[in-house]
Image (cartoon, rainbow, N blue to C red; front, side, top):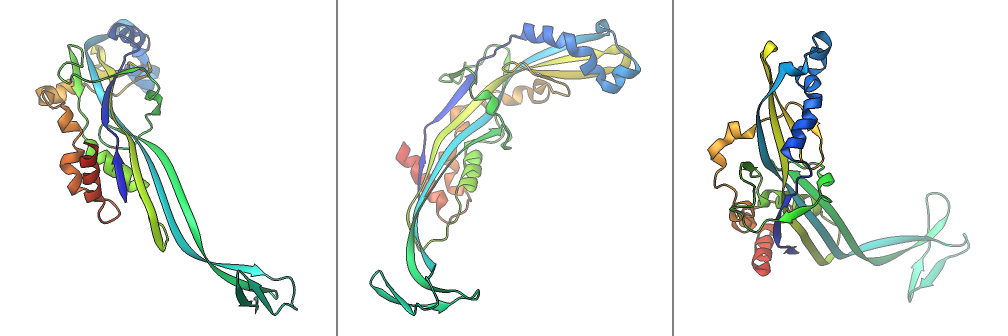
Length: 283
């Protein structure tokens, strides 16, 4: 088996909405989002009763991996061919004299032993959230973005960059486990896996924290700065992670396929060694 790796890339999705626009849009929905459906029915809050307490601008990571597999192999096959009538005693085909045998259904046939020459090709696209869970994030793939070249300064001032919990090795392992499948074959002539895209993307999110003082209730509303979607029940990650994130976002740390390749466990014996070789060959 041959494994070929594309060069890794990282991108920053360009916000389509500013924090100010996000605030204006959320203000129109805050009463129903903060109060909730039941709360809104029992005691409808006035807009002025719900006040913005704080806001957070952050970049959340997700992975894109595109992979293609090509397998060429030979396998033995026995072909059963019906003959034209009960009067046929034997058949000469392909230089062979073949006996005619009766079938269970009352007919008669001959059998030919042959080799099937097969080629299987598959291609798939995978997206994973920052924790390494496969998720449908294809809605972001056609959005405008810019490639990250300066990892120290790619995020605007005041923006929290949240690194993925799952590194490149984890998502590559998941893709290989999905794409590499056993085949029934006598001889495998070619087995090749191409990881055509290994891409880390950061998407902008605004987290707006509101307080409903009369009810002693606080809630964080998240606004997707790319799609414009708003959802309740969000989090302010800066409050939880704070300085723990400082210095964690580096290219070497996130794209760690080389470091961990030998520790990979995927179907097919020597895959880890071949992946390590692919890394070296690419470089």
